[in-house]
Length: 314
Image 1 (cartoon, rainbow, N blue to C red):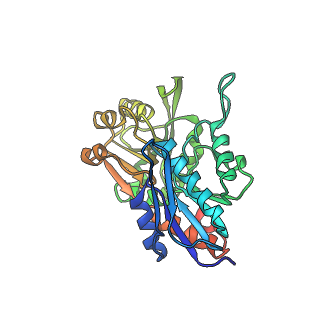
Image 2: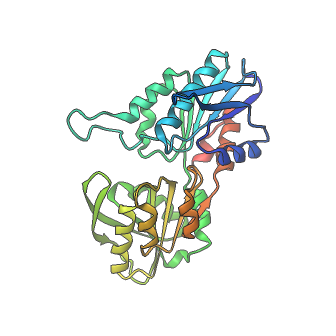
Image 3: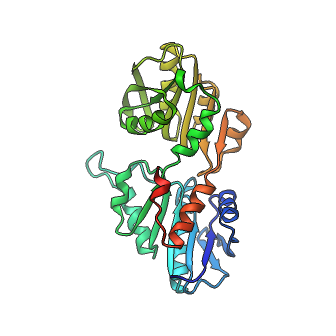
């Protein structure tokens, strides 16, 4: 058993880090994370971490490279300070979409990031809704991949009539996620048949399933440029859908995403706080952010006490 738990956080999502600390009942440690004048990351761990069970809370969202480097340098600092165990709590795992070779001479960046984390001295990773579950196999250390689906489903259930609702997968790859979301609600299932013409570009063709006069909930793991989501919504509206909602764990919201969603047929977008919501998204009034600090805190508490984490995967 390690000595007491230590929580440290970078600059990526201080609000979530504070909420996790409150849920666990332990204070955030003193870690000064800034930059030198030339832009290099500067980290100073001001608490004693020798022999401690250290949890570094840092999603690698935008700016992805800065946040990733902060995490790596914090891990190295803790390792050199003789921390007992270092767990990286990464609610959003950046570079996760680059999980395979899609063209000759293309990198597998998700694997590279896994190697960097391990080399920096991280002993365990706690993350949420990886873009592809098999990314866990890129690591030679334990990885716990939590699911935000039950938390999001509870929030969505207050706004829909399950018997008259269809859960929609925006592409064939998300069918399992959509089916898992639909079953507890007693809702139907539909799939958007989609062809992708290039990076961040997609075209919805037709709908597999009955959506006429139904409340439709599009379920995905993340919203990036919102091209897939808004085209799916247009297809559903054309198919006679009554109301359209969207659910995603990670609100990446890059480029024209917020404008597209404001102009779309989507009535409400449910996301978690794994990534800080951009001010424009908050101002739009279309987003409802569902907190996941309690879920992450429960997993961290179980890891610290060497209890099973599997009960949180349901």
